[in-house]
Length: 517
Image 1: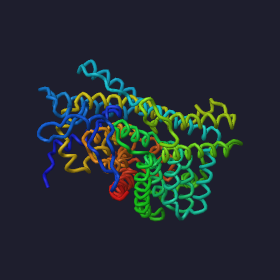
Image 2 (image 1 turned 90 degrees about the vertical axis):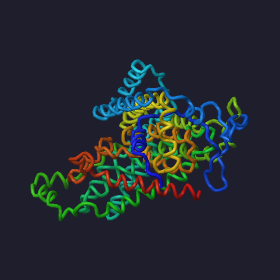
Image 3 (image 1 turned 135 degrees about the horizontal axis):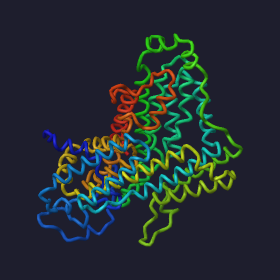
Image 4 (image 1 turned 120 degrees about the horizontal axis):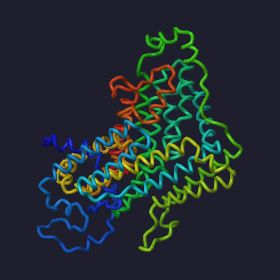
């Protein structure tokens, strides 16, 4: 096996900062999704005259065209200096938190345009619109109390089976995320998980850390998440016939497998509370003992009269999306070009319609929807993606020939490095939708086989790597025992090992499934 050049691996590590947008995703030769199933290219490239020396037929915007462009003398300096600038922007964005990452991304685009004379890329408008539609409709669940209804059901399940809390807690948060399309709905469940664990004498870190990880792992397994819709849109832009169902039949079982393996590891993590000297020292103090073992009320709000109605309508909306994804040829009308509407567009108007029907049916005040925690968290996520993905696109689109000349051979020879690049991207971008927008189009333009691309999707979750994500911080705060920790050395926090186990097990299972399905 050839030795991989260190410089190329370094480029893969930092490729998290560069992104071609979905409508610039490049055409590739026919690829195989599964045995006997071929992804059919639909552009006009196949009619182009043959190129001499039996080289692949190329069309405008393909990898071969970009790779053949002459590189300017300062191409290396321009790319690496812009990469450093992007890393600085991401660092301060994470440091300030919240919408700062998006705002600083806009600052980065400004600097690239005026200092380097670059043409600005295109912001991920479609993904942002999906986030707005899904989050707004999911917020109606919180406003009507339907989310509280779901949490109450999960709470009953957890309290009835406390001995299985390490498995049931992450399964509950995983399926909650699958249902509502966002991991920000997990917060009401966290105090319940803590209360059940501490009352049973189980180290709270064991179920709580993996529950937080599972809440984010479920995003790519959700039919209404922005991440899943982004992948569908990217493949559609590249004229590849990959449906939402093709994605979910890989991500759902793969992510579930990763969750269960990580939960099994968590069963014995850390010391039992009875043998933990730090914990025993805390409860020796009467006030601390009362605080640690005192009843923690679940943060689930009040269940309203229209809660069941809202939940029923929401579930019917999700069912409608799945049915449309299964039978698009029968249900969806054709556009001006004779093609069926993209699922990424369908997801937007269907989710908005579901939200509107819920408001009509429950008579909930619209102001209550915009005041919910889910709505606020979703809007922050949209702004974050807006700025940082825009800057990332500007960097890669302006340096694409140089990037492709550096990484093409490595990625083709070692497909796992593409998953590593996606993992590194997510650690910085802290959004699976943004990560997929950053990395997936590059894989398409490199001609990486579709099964490999699908198998790498679970690697888009790595923002547990640095313990700054809201759900992780909330988990630490809800653990009164102090067993769930942020770590004193940045990387030695409670989420690192279960996160690594869950993600890379999911990737391994996804690779296996992509060859079978």
